[in-house]
Image (cartoon, rainbow, N blue to C red; front, side, top):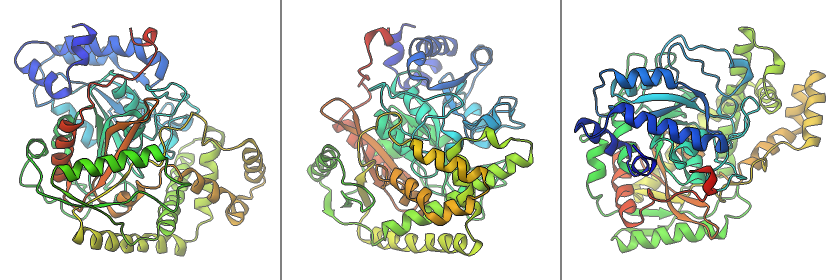
Length: 498
């Protein structure tokens, strides 16, 4: 199979061709490997290759709706028994997974052929993929820019044509942010839709969920159909299975919708005018389709929402670091920024932590009230196009101050001065629109409908009420028909994609 034929197929078409006997799983895998060999040295999306294991699997009998589709797993919360899962950290560089995560087992049972793992920021804690362990992943649309994070390796791999779909997860925008930066499709399922076992019942109090990034709507629908549904260690709330598959939903027209449009956020230093224009153009297209779009936003204090996201996040990072240290990890195996966030987490009182989690329900009520009057919320996915690599790195002065404070055991002083918190909030300015869906557990999606004047992708986001995944797939598929994006190719130098 030549590269042009491979790049022309999405995962759904690949699986159909395998079922018809027109192509073999081995043919598809070798095409994916060849593409990775040609492209990945320039974008650094893949951190671990599993070519030999994949070749053995492709030669064997495969069954299921995804049989024969080449696939990459994210190197975080997508463990495969016997394979190292680093979480982007030197502290886990030799951590062999003792068991396979439920979602991975379901993808494998459906016939997907995994041949590698994709790059992530350390523990997925940043909106850009620049870990010290493996180095940065580059955006295929512009190699000087970030692919977003934390599923940046997966989004870059899909955008560059290595695979049509790759594993992802989202605890604060980590599916939607890289989807917007790289020009691919990314849907974050709602809370409880996808299992998180067998290691734990839920991630980040249900705020983090597993999904994929893909080139087409129907591919994301097919991959979510495979992994949805509870398991024995699911959270203590039931998943109400929808009356139709997500694949079927993507094939059907949505009802006439009332859509609320939000273009600004007080956390952003102004949304890029090209991003605003792209979202307004989307609103105009929706109006032409017969939907009603009005400017409206949930009655939420966004500054408070950001703090209520960050406080539990700091504590989560502290718990992660401390657990790994209990199992032998050294302090110097964690990145400086991670150690600073962990210090903030340890300095957080139990009362402050509990109050932030209690306010999550306040935000849920506010968004629920919004959805009583609007079927969907439409926003930019990110306030800007993909930033340059290193744009949000901690400054040299901040790094020196952090080193001194941590070595002196002054972690509480870091928290008391507020400098570190201010730095984290500063880094939210380009991604202020995504955390709401995580805190409230709502499904949300980023669509790559537009590009900037210089060809950088621009994503638009829709947030739906609980159980709205099918509606998001239905509307997304109609927008995909109106403004097709799957055939776009990143403007990488020809020598890098030959």
